[in-house]
Length: 298
Ligand code: FAD
Ligand code: A2P
Image (cartoon, rainbow, N blue to C red; front, side):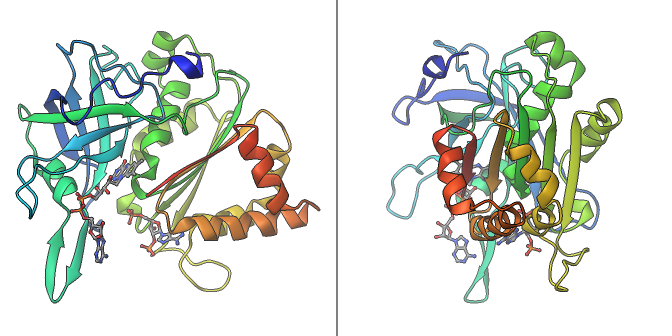
């Protein structure tokens, strides 16, 4: 699909689409920190239909009202499914949602929309807006190389990309015969927090020449300085190989997840570039201009 034809704002907050929850299950293993769910909505019956492509987001409007008695504002969530959906029937959309929880004045505060989403049950009706976003679209080129830097739920768009590249039924549907290299750097606090791990291992086994998967498990692994292992430390370790890829103009880089990782990634890229005699401060805007540097952090 051409960039200009990618659908946006088919549904807006004043007239949202009402989807139906199909599935809602935990993505975490025993011993994981927090709550992260995979949630699928049935989009059947939409008129117009809520079409989307990989790399876009949708808005969710939680039931209920805010402190001012107004309906809750929408929150954006990256779409974790391909346009064909997890069932390949083209009538669903899936999300990967972490419940926001923090302590304030000795009390646990639960995020409004993320808690609503983690708690909803199959059959529940949910107000959906969008789709939005053209920042994280995949190139059409089957020979492209895709470097993915994700923390936590930042895996969501990457999961859609990787399904598009390596999931057998999805490949049959999409006729996109990906032949490039995909390299995922994934940051999670514990092994039990790794998301979609079984799928990723299957892709590794089936496509060893096309898929590389590097993990940074912050609370189980240490970086060279003895601190928590973050994806930027893995970027530093892989500097040479990574920049060999970046020098190829078919390589795109996607960054998604915690906003807080951006300075660390920048620092790691600066160091990595220096080792190759390159200047990241000059290179990054060039990559951005060429549509090869894609960032969606929150
Ligand atoms: P709210 O009730 O809105 O609470 C959030 C507010 O709480 C913050 O604005 C801040 O004021 C306060 N707060 C937060 N943390 C603290 C703290 N530690 N101490 C004090 N105050 C604090 N989320 C996902 O889980 N998965 C995704 O795929 C995803 N994709 C996104 C894509 C985009 C483009 C964007 C912009 C955001 C995305 N998000 C995603 C984040 C999501 O939109 C919500 O922001 C998130 O779920 C929290 O919303 P909430 O309603 O639960 O929290
Ligand atoms: P940690 O929380 O151990 O400091 P999740 O969303 O599941 O919590 O995962 C986010 C991952 O990103 C965690 O491993 C977290 O580490 C890590 N992380 C936190 N801050 C940063 C940062 N500034 N740069 C890179 N990774 C970070």
